[in-house]
Length: 377
Image (cartoon, rainbow, N blue to C red):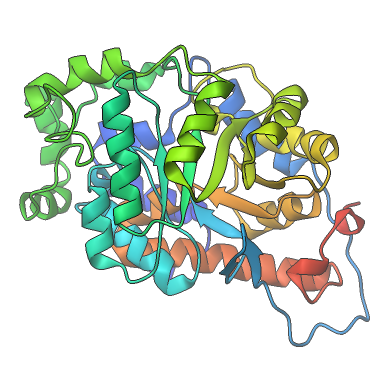
């Protein structure tokens, strides 16, 4: 891993180690993938101001996200099927994040359960919630997250209807994998992945199987998930979720100024400017393009975070300059996880930290808290 200098290096290594169906799941967008590409490309259009002859000593990236101290303004995004990039993936990523001093967010659609992650961490992590039609199951998820000591609930708003991802459909994605000749070949060419997966019992959706009604095994899971995402989800649902949760609430999936202003009435502690990594509405604006508009729309009435397209520490720096109090990385840590498990996640975080630190210094700033639009050209 000493030759892994960029997130792109980790991506290439992960592609060699992870079966195609699961690598594509992490690396794909909806339909033409235009929004997925824009998330990355629009960062490159933002230029930084180089400054000289300024004091660059005693630099610090430390700050806070929703009142929690973080070593840098980066959290690990909630990502589904993380445990299929590497055996016990959510547990490994959570431990790496904890050691690094950044938040880890566990997805509802994770392979390892809430309880699994709680068993290997000593500090609170965050839990991401999808709202299902089965409200008893949703309430149970919230209660399990509280019992595990999660310090924030991240409510995803933009997955009422699942966007079409062509790669997943062509690959016949499932967890665990189907045993068709194509899938067997994909796994056979990744022997280390297979060996690691054979050593763990966690190969399904740990938060769902055994907890949701009529989902006692894998055979009943596909039909349940297809039917359960609730298209009626509304702003009123945020109210009862917040009341049931009783703790810090983050709303994920805001990409419009009007929605951002509507979120102010919910009492949320933060909103995440996000288009679901380009995996939902293809043709939507990139997250970074909408970030400054949403920051201007809400002012200081709610903490604004952003997610989507971050592939370097410079991207984080640009997002902070445009008003984000925190950012989230999904694919970068998944590439690291697929490349080398827990150490790969740590490497991804180290790459981002070093790039952010050096770039901040060359822009003439010592503290991430002082970074604003003045560093942009």
